[in-house]
Amino acid sequence: MDPFRITSKKVLTLVMVIDKDQKKILLGYKKRGFGAHLWNGFGGKVEPGETPKEGAHRELEEEAGITVTPENLKKAGILLFLFENDPVALETHIYTAYEHDGQIRECDEMRPQWFDFAAIPFDQMWEDDKIWLPLLLKGQDPFFGRMYFKRKSIGEQEQVDAISSASSSADATLANHSTTMTSTPFTKAEPKPFYMSDYHLELDLTGVPKDVALDGTVASFEN
Ligand SMILES: Nc1nc2c([nH]c(=O)n2[C@H]2C[C@H](O)[C@@H](COP(=O)(O)OP(=O)(O)OP(=O)(O)O)O2)c(=O)[nH]1
Image (cartoon, rainbow, N blue to C red; front, side, top):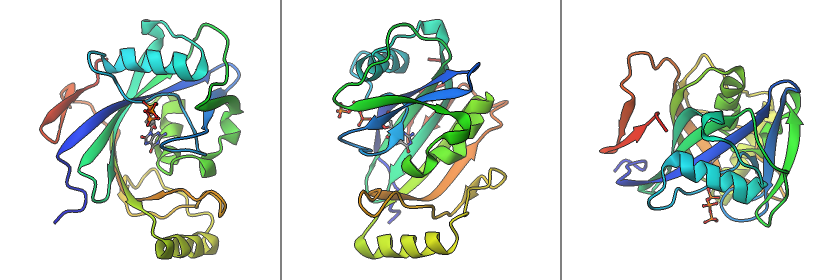
């Protein structure tokens, strides 16, 4: 049986707030819940009755205290996160926001902080981010990808540690869009619970219909 077989999905959002002039990105340190102790953009589950764009707007305000006008919230891509032996995929709609209103503030879930493009803390982020975030920063939109994650057992954690200390520069090559990779663990004290075992990223979406079918349901690039 395929350990990555999915039967349903949850729709999530993720907003990357970018200051183009200063070449900075706003990330939040996730204090609790799914992805705790990692730096990430702002987002969460889309609620019933919301479009992904409305959900993205709401989550950004809840988690970072700022708002973005609908025309400044641009769809950058859709990523499907699949977890071994979990039939529910996470379909994440990713947006960029180059303008925002309001005062950035911390909440009980996220601690926002600006990072220079050259100092993005990829080793303290989800492992797939180093693959697609550079593309997003270059403005190479849209992208569509599938990211396959395995849960770390204690044995696997030791194996990953050993491999990554033997070759700490095992960076993902963008030329290789479908590969098996093992990347740097977070820290011994706060291990990442999952590691990415494979991924597939499509960048050339010319000719792809605006709707991409996933597990029988449909994701739209439109909103
Ligand atoms: N950068 C990045 N973000 C990811 C990955 N996987 C993944 O779910 N996310 C994002 C999508 C969502 O923005 C966020 C997970 O949403 P969440 O569980 O915090 O949702 P929520 O705020 O509605 O949760 P809650 O209030 O119910 O705790 O993490 C990934 O591999 N990379």
